[in-house]
Picture 1 (cartoon, rainbow, N blue to C red):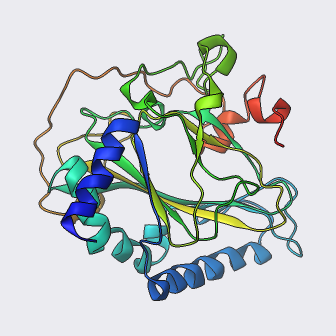
Picture 2 (cartoon, rainbow, N blue to C red; picture 1 turned 90 degrees about the vertical axis):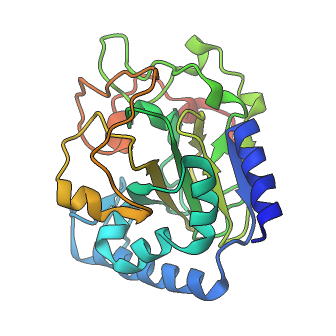
Length: 293
């Protein structure tokens, strides 16, 4: 990617809160990522419950595996960590968060072709408050993402705030916003459609979600969440050695930069764990009732 293209992509990110970059991942690199993903997913044929690597979906059977997430793939295979710090990604991410970058988190969300799980509308900042907001989330399409297989959808301009409520009426964190209560006009949502190897980048405040996959084709997407080295997480304890090992560019630091950002912790919760567990507590769901045509 040349410098001018990078500048144009970052300008779109800052204006809309997200940007779609087609065909960024070279075919050989994409093939390697998909091969390791296939191998990790094959582990579901040998278990009936969640493992340290796999989070299973409703209806899973060993003979017919259903997986909704590969947990922290950067820990499961070094290929993912190497990719997370590859030059094309660092060129883009450093323009957003600065030269000193930590991989805050990683995951691969998978949607089986026969109604793979949706993710209700939410803002990532509700799950991952830090001392400052120099952060971004890169989504890597491991399969083609089309209109019918549950692509990521993002609300333009929502990155400017506010942070909407992700707790229910009883004060428990449920990991989703109430579209009707907050008057969110989903007619403005943009589906991020592209071929495998394309990526998107979104801001942690951007409202986004994804519908069930009803296409008959698998849809897998890797999320790499990045933070400036001096953005300290406020929602979990830190193993310092492991924390510093997640530096992907520049230098780590014990200096914490605090800025006036709105923070509400993702607690208390009835269902600790992933977003799927949090959203299992929802009393009403947009994607359970929305017209998906």
